[in-house]
Length: 350
Ligand SMILES: *Cc1c(COP(=O)(O)O)cnc(C)c1O
Image 1 (cartoon, helix red, strand yellow):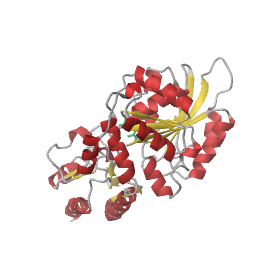
Image 2 (cartoon, protein in one colour):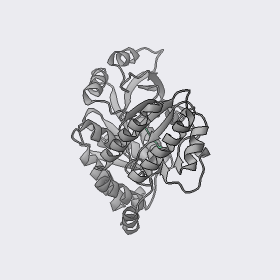
Image 3 (cartoon, protein in one colour):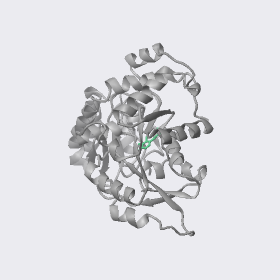
Image 4 (spheres, helix red, strand yellow):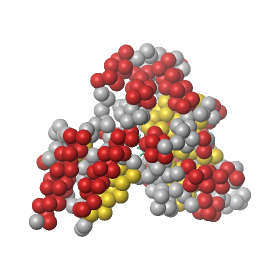
């Protein structure tokens, strides 16, 4: 069962602890206040000072020329791909990466862009030899390979810069551009313990989500060279993504960048703690704020049902369940989740 398919089946009453995703974070009182007070204008006219500030701040922090505010990570990757590739051109990416697997192949459906998806290594990276093997020669039978698309973090794994640099180096040597789906960019930075721009430095364009662990209600930002960002801005308008007084949303993003980046390491520590407590009950893979948990015999529908009774929301996925830590899971809520798991597996084994 895929990680998203059954999210909506979880009970809807108020829960203490929602482990389905870090997208469930809600704007807190301070964030709502800055949203209410945001200075706004018409962003399609380029007049919204708060959107402009968010785009500039993130571009500068990541060492890029320009930024573009978008409604979602999917839209951000999508316009990024459209800005890099024309019809009949191709992106090489990872088979399990979001851009290929969870974005309804919009770039192919609406952009005429081909994908060549590669298997990923255990650490979440692509092997440089596989990338080289997938780059097409100049031949009328084949698409024109234009772009390499990587992802960090991938399933929570923070891929080391040296590994990514091997991939981007072979791509650049073949004249490709390189894009990073950095939906959880700052989780990767926290785990890699590197300078904030060091990861972005390897790429032309980077997409960052504000609405996951950073806790904003809406929004992603694409950063990169001005020429590509200008093209992406035109695509965003064409796709209906030009919004007006969007400063109300951008204010939440700015607040998130100021207040919610440094605390991501707390989510990672809580994930490590939960992983430790789950380890007697099955296979547990933890990296940054995510855990993939496979109890013996696999997850059945009994587990989410039992946890719901304890006020803990899980996805309805069977087999392996993904648990995600985020700022709305307090230590107290985490303890509730641990007690719920222990009572479920304790009762079964006795
Ligand atoms: C969440 C996510 C996205 C974008 O998702 P949206 O729901 O469209 O904002 C892109 N890539 C990865 C790896 C993600 O986890």
